[in-house]
Structure formats: structure tokens, C-alpha cells
View: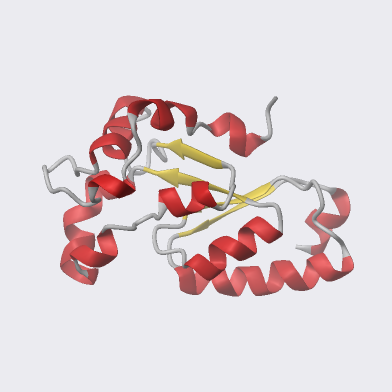
Length: 159
């Protein structure tokens, strides 16, 4: 981490659960005290169960989050394991946007789904899995314009 920060190399970390994200943030904050992350482009991928506190910490370090549409494909499994209430905020996109985080939406192709962006956009707007289960309540979904504006260029720092 120190080497990346010293050389100003952008990085990303795939992390689904807040337990992993919060531990990584402990390390990031320790490095940041010695080699500031100021202006360094970095982000987490996935972050389905990121906590409000971790969102604050990511924002304070200038990071971003690249969400994927995994819940569109694994929503039923997630609900069976963690419950419908946990799935309502997996990931908490509206909270991330409210914190001012750069958010990118994608498909995690070709590991989870195809590179077809329409599946991801449909999930962001409807909150439904491909199996038809509604995961996110209306207040947690994005409208079509918001969904189209959540793109990778914000995460990659493009102008």
C-alpha cells in the first residue's frame, strides 16, 4: 500500500463485505498518515455490505466505489443467507452518492455476467434480480437518468 501511494499508482480492491472493507481502511488510513492519498485514484469494487461508517472513511480518503450487478444474479441467494432487509441496501448506492463518492456501475464481466450494460441498468432502476425478486425498495433505486450518470468515467477520474 505504501509503495502504491508513494508512486501515486491508482489501485482497486475487490471487497464485498464490510468486514474486509473496514480492515483494509485501517491499513489505508495508516499509510495515509505517512504518505497522503491526496489526489490518488483508488476504489473498492463490489462493496455490497459496506457500512455507513466505512462509506464516510472512503470519502475522507478520497476513494470511490465501483459497484457491479452481482445482486441482479445472486439476489435470491443473498436474501436466503442474509435476509430481505439486508438485501434492500446491498449495496447502499443512494448513501454512497449522498456522501459524494464517485460511483461507477458495471457488470463485472465476464465473471458474473456478460458485458451487456442493460442488465446492470435494469437492476439499478428496478431493484429486481433477473429471477424477478424485488431486492431494493423504491427509495433505494435510481431513476433512469441517475443510472446512466453512474458510470466508470467518474471512478477512473476521467474529465
